[in-house]
Image (tube, rainbow, N blue to C red; front, side, top):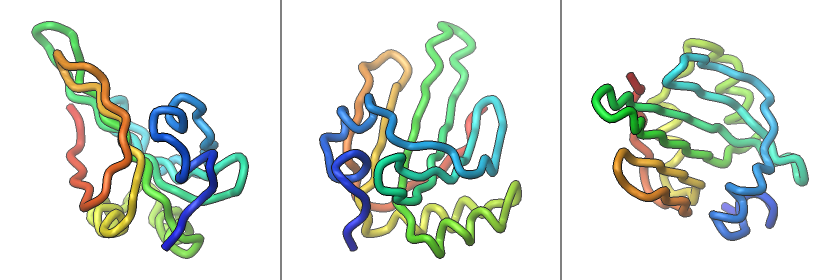
Length: 127
């Protein structure tokens, strides 16, 4: 299945990440270290879900941060929005199977990495 346009899911991963083409449609989870947002592309309207996780580095203060942006069908987008704050992260993981999605990783003590990922996403809630 093809998703999006050159602005969101078909361009270079670092360029898409830098351009920030997504706007929020609905914030489902709003925790300081874990958020889930249903988003859409400003250009083509492609729905997607963005998951943010942060892991606190209490010793050095170099908190690891991870973002994943997974394209969705309109039906999937509506399904997640309907779940609201009780969104099932296992469902989001299942939606990532077989899809290319944007991943931006800022691991503790390492350089940032912005890539297209393929394969199952594993969501861990931050602390």
